[in-house]
Amino acid sequence: MSDPNDDDMDKPLTKRDALELFFTKREALEIFLAKREFHDVMKNVFDYLDKRFEAVDNRFEAVDKRLEANDERLNALMKWFGSEFRQQLNDDMAGHIGTMGLQLRRDIGLLDDRYKDLPERVTKL
Image (cartoon, rainbow, N blue to C red; front, side):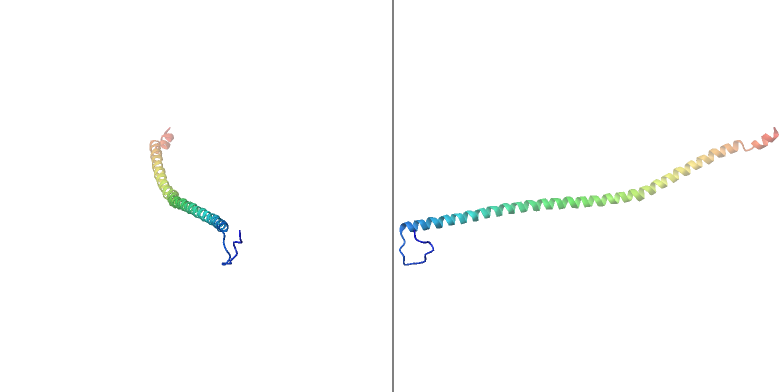
């Protein structure tokens, strides 16, 4: 075959040269197209993967937002538990202790009333 890079337009081209040139160029074109097709397929695969990863990222962001909201509610609950509940418990305890104090005074008052004249009775004896 003659040199494919030969640009001499006046040189005769045989049928063999033409077929060899055609098949050489055809193989090169098929390789080029195969590479391009592979490139297109891989681009589609990576585009699909990018979309899937984006969906996963969006789900993680949604979960993160829900966790932040739950964290804020938990902090508010703990703050209430720390202040309101404690205040309510203190108020309840104060009421119970006051009631117990009144009961003790009443019981001691009953004893005092019963033995109020005890010194006089003892001196009479």
